[in-house]
Length: 167
Image (cartoon, rainbow, N blue to C red):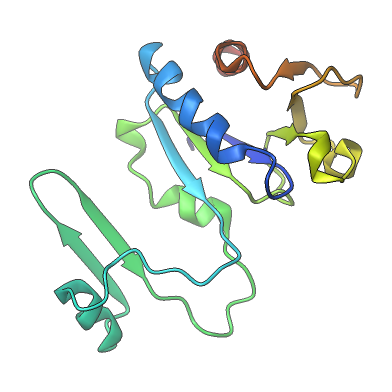
């Protein structure tokens, strides 16, 4: 199984921004990253009116769209599905082309996590701390019993991940 690191935070903390900065830094260090993002919103990744959208709306349970540049698989889940299983999703990724899976969200999962925290959210960092947190990335120093990473220095966060992977 591929190593997973989840980035857990309250909305508006900068998870996506940090991941946008980290991915090229890790790639430059020869670490091939996959990404799984959790959303609480209903979402479509295909465009209304396009064939893939029309066929999915017609009732296809899975739609795979492929081109020379990329392919994407959309899978419908039952309306009564309680939650999305992170490990199942990770198992759908091609492990032969990846070294690490970065996870945005899934803050309640039992996987290694880096908490991303900013005071502006109005929430406390320790609300996100559990035994799976391996570090906290924030814009101000915190003493929380795990390493503190400067959110404004993504190269330091990348260094931490590289060392963690060697672990």
